[in-house]
Structures are given as structure tokens and as C-alpha cells.
Length: 459
Image 1 (cartoon, helix red, strand yellow):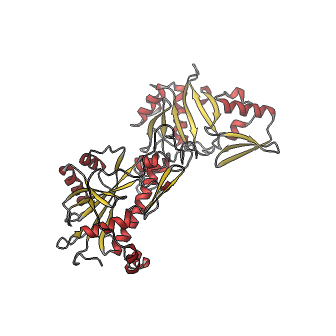
Image 2 (cartoon, one colour):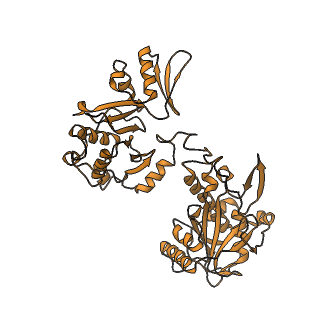
Image 3 (cartoon, rainbow, N blue to C red):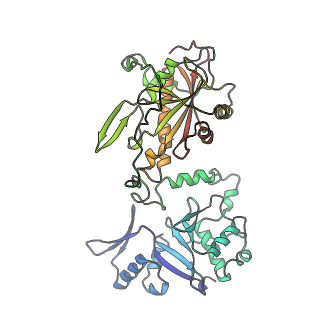
């Protein structure tokens, strides 16, 4: 069957050919290099044709390049309809797939991790960790893939594709790694089962790999430079606020417990002393020590900040919104912490949405009463994504992690009960505040209060 199918070849996207001083040719897709050695004029001409676009096997006969480059993952292979020559789909290699081609299951079914996404006017079928992406050029191939979502055999697929193509199509999908595998259902094999589709997709797409080229579509590309101005590092005050007490850092250097004690004593605590709740002064000290702006500098017209935790590219995109339940000296409600002015600004928020945020967090933690303060951590996404491509959101989550560690250590040094929260409801924050969730949204939550059995004073 496969003999009736037309194959077209081209070099993988992002591959460049370079000639060394000795005359040897190398294929380069950083950080991978394939030394081809000295090529004959016919081979060099064939390589140029592969670089220029699709070419048929008759143009490459006798060069040996296809057999050498295909299993190493350097060639895109397009399968065309046998009669018309219309391209149906292309296997786009992400790594070296090798020569072995596993037999497709019958009936065949798409992996539960498969994603069908538009790209350059076409649909691309992809599974994180697979050997290939499959670019679908023809509506018939798209229709066949839709059947595979529920499981289909060759007879059913023949309703969309020529019989001569169906078996090759199934073989290629199995070879690409986008079909369901028996191991995914084995009760004791958690390698794939442990991953939810969106988590695996996010993990692989925010890391370097076969789909990404450093400096082109991942990394510090500054892809919006010249299109839109970057967000300013500091937000302008929204209006009148509550000026907060500034702790004496020099005195704290002398009185704080040592770093080792703080690290070893740190623990997550989910119970609070409502008879002696958190005070405004304690909250002020906590916020100042964790997140207030310590330094400002300008370089080449760009303003950079310094805060008590590190931030990639000095983006400092994180904002803190204390949701106050019980704090002596403060009215209950939602506040925004002005990290530059060390103030609290009251946020006009929907009370029902705030109650839902509190209730969801309480249910997630399984605690009898909410914390005295639930610190909602948001990100102004454009501060990071203007500069960094593909891993911007992953970088934001790393920043949340280092901020949480600082919050834990400060809370421990102050003798407070603290606990980072695994997840929260970003939609409710948007509903409560009216802030566009694609411009700024919650990315973390942190519970804070006084420890039971204390008098609420600083330890």
C-alpha cells in the first residue's frame, strides 16, 4: 500500500547547512549538529533542494541522504495523495525517531494528550513527548483524525482517505507517537497517566525542545518591541491609601532568629488565634519585609527595581492583594499593597465574589475558619511576556515560588502562622475586581495569621 503513496522531503524547520574549512558539511539546529562529511556534487545539490522546499524521491535517488537523514530526525516527510499528488499531511520531526515503526493498534485511538491546534492556516496534531508533530494539509486528513478521537479502524478511515493512504496514515501516526498506547492504561504504569493533558502540554511547551529554537520563538525575544511599549515597573497609586508602619531593618538584623533556625522551624500552619488576631503593624512589617521596593535604577532608559526576592529580568510583575478577614486596625475587605509607597489601597470589590474566594480557599484547605489574611498574589503578565517568549508563564510561577519562600521565612521569624496554597480561583478574582484576567490575574495565594495560644505579639 505504501508504495502507491507519494513522499516529498524537505529539511526540518530551523536547520542550516554549514561547510567547515576542511570541506565537510554539517547540519545544524542548535544545539544539535550532524556531521555529513565531504559531499559529492550530486549530494550537495540534493541538500540544497531539501533546503529550498519539498522535493520528490526521484530528485534524491542515488544520494543516500534520505536513508541517512530521516531516522536521525532531520527531514520533514510529506505524504501526498497517490492520484492527484495533493499533500495530505507532513511528519515534522521533533527528535530522532529511529528506524523502528511500531504497528498501529486496531482500532486506533488518539492519545488523551493529543492537541489539535491551528498554525499558519493549517491544523497541527501534537502530543507532548512524541517523536513528530503531524501537520494536516487536507480536510480529508482532518476528518480522519476526528474519527480517531473516538477510535476507528482502517475500514472507517477509508471513508475519508484513499485505501492506499489509510494504512500508511495509521503507521505514520503510530510512528509519530500520537496514538493511544496500551501502557497508558496499565494500572501500575504511571509514566503518562500521572500527567493531565494541560500540565504535560504546559511543561513541554515552556522548555527548550524540538518545537522551539532559542532566540527565535523562545527566550528573550522581546517580540513586542516596536509594537507596544512595555508595562512600567510600578503601578501608579489608584487613590488615597493607608500609610503603613515601616519596620526598623537594622534592629531586626540584631533581633531576628538566625537563618538556620528560621529554615528549620518553618512549617505550614492552618490554625489561627481569633482572640488575638493579626495587627495592622504586624501585617505592615510582613508586607514590607517580603515585597516592598528597596531600590530603583535606570539603565539605557529602562527602570529596574530591587525587592527582597529575585525576579528574572528584574520584571517584578507580582502584586499583592491582602484579603483581610480579621486584622486589628483594618476594616475587613480587599486591599492592594503599594510596594513602592508601602501603603494599602482599598479595592472596591464585589463582596459576593470575595466570599466565594474565601470559601473556596477554606474548602481546599479543609480548615474550620479562614485565615486572618489571605494574600492574593497576582501577576501583571505583560511585564514578563513582553520580553520573554514561550516560558513567560513558567517564569512567573518560579517567581511565585521564591516569593512564597521569603513569605514563609519572614512569617517564621515573626512568629506567625503561614501556609502557601496550591491553587485558587482566578475567575473569581476577576469577578470581584473587574480587572482583565488576561492582563493581571491571580497566580498564587498565601494564608497568614497569628498562632493559636499566643497573645498576638511578635515572637
